[in-house]
Length: 598
Image: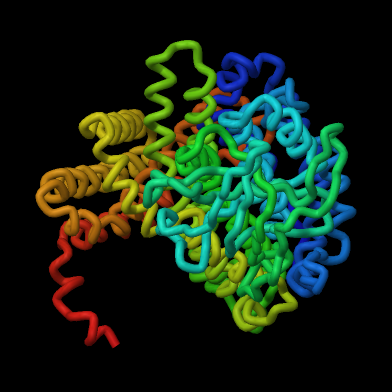
């Protein structure tokens, strides 16, 4: 596997020209953060990721994590030492409030850092990033004691956390869960049940793990309205804050998976385990969404991160591998395969998709920062609406593109891509989980058409599409390359507007028709959004070049324009072709009975 090179220039470009990092840092609570500090952090963290964590990616895939009969799990060689370096440097604390030991940085910056970690080693990254979700839930809904005892240690990385939702008979339908929580006279609860697919349910990176577990109290109503959320620690915590005896929360097995093998995916058995209620009874599902929404953004980032790593590997291989004679080269010679048109097409496709994903992920994060920290309530509301609209796009489209880009990387490698030793096959295997967990991409599409499009009577999606229209006008006022991008976006926007109108008109009358077109609609809208963001990047690159502030890196900025034009002319038209799938209705899906779907 080739070395991982942190894409600092590309991250800096998006932070400067798509999300406006200085404006984010000027939000209330972030005044101590500035652009120079952020870029310095990216450089420093990038070194840790490339030099310490990335070399463990292949090791983790080969060794995997190991379950032991005493219910313990050990991670691959080098993982505990790497985690300790990560923890001691405070990288996991960057985005959390200073009063709990965090750095108080914007989520936008934290996500940029997370990209580096996840590209370096996705399986490793899942241990600290699951803890981040637990911190968010506790800070929002936990008691002061729970914040002091658990959140501060999770922020420091001294402890890690998990999410425990899924059960053997309750996957996407969380409301079907059966785990019981029985109240005790001392105010604690006794938790009994089985949870599956629990990431880092046990490991040797930290001594303590705080499991956040969804369960039902005895008189809870059925469905999601009767779910409560509990902290169930691996080790009980004594009154003085020290760790005590082992709780009866045990890993009884770990899954043997297609990818992310170093991340132990655990089956958890809670046998009358001690638990502590978070907030109120029957409010657990609402609390968990605090964790899940940002987790979905984090999973979208996984698609980006693996795409970036795969793109780097494919580009390096294409530069080094000589095969055949490219058009125009001398007879009797062989050319680097990067000179062959079809390989160049694949590489440009990968580059364009990576850059579009990065812009979408960081724009989504910026919207959340503004929603949480802007001084004007109306601006906060508008940003929150944008974040709600973008989240299913980020989660679903970026993870779908992660699978496509890593698959293209295998193709660029040719036969060697099918050989595990090159490392690119691992990225493809690792990427395949991301469209599945944290709500399958089909569920994200249903959320988009069922909940997000109707927000404020359709005003949110309307304003979003109007924003794309404004960018088109800017592009059409530019040079030939920018006009070409604007024209292609205009065609795509017209098709998306028609598809959106169809969903509004037909979805209310027959929701099944809207749901039948939900997945192609999400792909269609996401592709348009990716092209729009690259178009904004092309405008910014042209400004830099016209102002002569490229600092000798004119080729970098010219490439932004070319990449945006490639996306607009070569990839965006495919989205328009999805309109028929969006508007076709559900009839064809049910024209054949289930018995004959064999």
